[in-house]
Length: 115
Length: 113
Image (cartoon, rainbow over all chains, first blue to last red; front, side, top):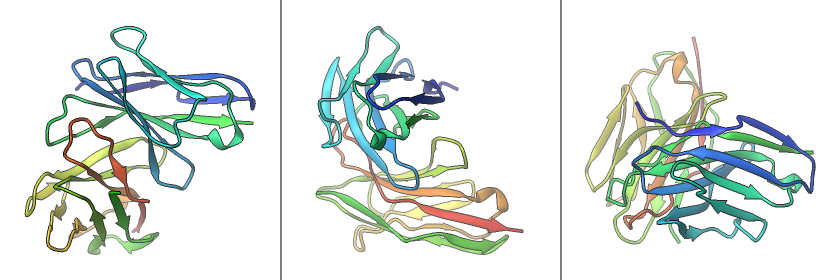
């Protein structure tokens, strides 16, 4: 069964460093998303991506964040200068189309720890 | 804006007990509703969904009915197992193409034998 994959599973970085989180969405899906979950808190939307551009973003997704689909398969989230409060689990998700079911498939997540 | 409210946890039950986790929502229009489950150390898995009023989603013994009149989507299971211990998230999707999911805060369920 097709699934969303994410790498790495755990990333540890120093404050101020750049990190790139990688995702491979399901191959025939058209919409891609990043969410994050700070430990013990709810899952929060960051950004969605469709047709090679950002379609929606939240207030959390400020100038230090960027997303890219560099080829036909990968979808990346870059954090330019990490802060302590960026420590969280980051989930990638993909969606086949924008139909009424809107069932997003989630990857296993990348745990980012900023020291 | 749209939002989801879940009952506070943790919920602690004995095996074979009846489970209810309350979820209510606020939305304009007619959203789709979901329950996601997160087992310890894992990502989010779709448990069940309902796309219109009075639909009942079901999976693995869990059920939830989309109640438009009460704006609710409560999760129920008749007899829980230790393996059901997880965090459960209620979520909605506004029915517009590709829009993001809006999650509740999650409810931790702990089942003991």
